[in-house]
Amino acid sequence: MKQNNLFTPLCVGKFDLSHRIVLAPLTRIRADEDTLAPTKLNVEYYAQRATPGGLLISEAVYISPEGMPIWSIYKNIKENGGQAPGIWTSGQVQGWKMVTKAVHSKGGLISCQLLHAGRVAQPEIAQHPLVKGTDLPIPSVSSSAIPITPLDEKGNDYNWDQKSVTPRALETQEIARICSDYRLAAINALEAGFDLIELHAAHGYLIEQFLCDGVNTRDDKYGGSIKNRARILFEVIETLIDVVGEERLGIRLSPVDNDPITKQPNQIYFGVVHSKPELSYEYVISKLSDYNLAYLLLTEPRVGVLSNIPGKDNTFEVPSGNYKYREIYQGTLIGAGGFTPLTARKALSEGNYDLIAFGRWFLSNPDLPERIKNGYKLNVYDRDTFYGGNEIGYTDYPDYKSLSKMNKKRYKLISQSSIGRSLS
Image 1 (tube, rainbow, N blue to C red):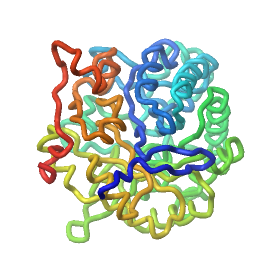
Image 2 (cartoon, rainbow, N blue to C red):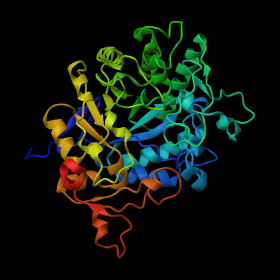
Image 3 (cartoon, one colour):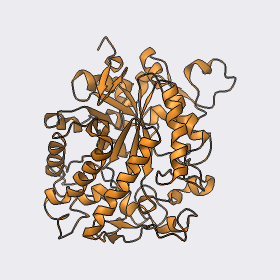
Image 4 (cartoon, rainbow, N blue to C red):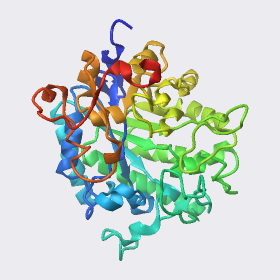
């Protein structure tokens, strides 16, 4: 622990990294509202966080209107505006070209996270100018015609203020179309200059809606056994490999467990539940070992509780657990969700993960690798500005060198040793 192992080099796929601090994929809802393309503000955001030999993973980039949520279900976005980005139009590709060029100019690498949200995407996208009047498929679709179940009488999970619609179950023959959408997105991502592609197969979105038997009640070749439920995942993987190759492809999963006493899951994403999640993920991750992937990113279940202030957020003291899949996955493993600089070093020193992806701390500290390396205090993130809006809470977080020049500090500072009760 004396030497900071977060700053040892590592080869990921075909790329050499100089350190092991990764920007986790973070939805920020700040794309252009008319084109759903990245803007100069997005370019600045990613460029701020790029470092020589450092890996950034993009926010979720949607492969089609059918898979794209309109995030006005969140109050802040209704009030301040904002859209998520896509990658199915030439204009969107041009926007992403500006992002990748800026990242590469600072010696960084960037992975494009591709996503189809499934039943999380709602029909409002049909009214968007890019979609209205076209024959593009629209939401909401899923593995089965089962809507997101509200967690309580107030509505849906993730603080939605409206109920979700019942999705249409995709027809068997439509899966090939879904794969084609991923293919086009991957081709576009390469044209945009991305170094790697990440398939988002986690957090309750389309692919996990197929993986879990709590949503997937199909009786065709994509339902029933875990082999069948995972079929779409591996068909998409094969599609992406055909475009980018194994060594430029990463996969994101969010394994959960059921408590042996209460039988309740330790995390639920958009109402997606499994009867035997451990067996499902053991099968999937074991099969992923058959590929020579760039990486597998696993989200720790503790990521779900996000509302506490960082000095007292006890989720930071919850032990990580998904590293148990290290025993069955032989490739590069990235851990994400609730890590601190101290627990990240510990995870690496114990061989649990090869890299650590930071979300909240990287969005509020554009120079996070430098701050961790030198033990500098961190800017505390402003939760109210996570989604939508403008540069506030996005590109206005100062780097450490700028702090002494600022007459009035907008953001509080916290020592790295004070994050969470276990580190106080």
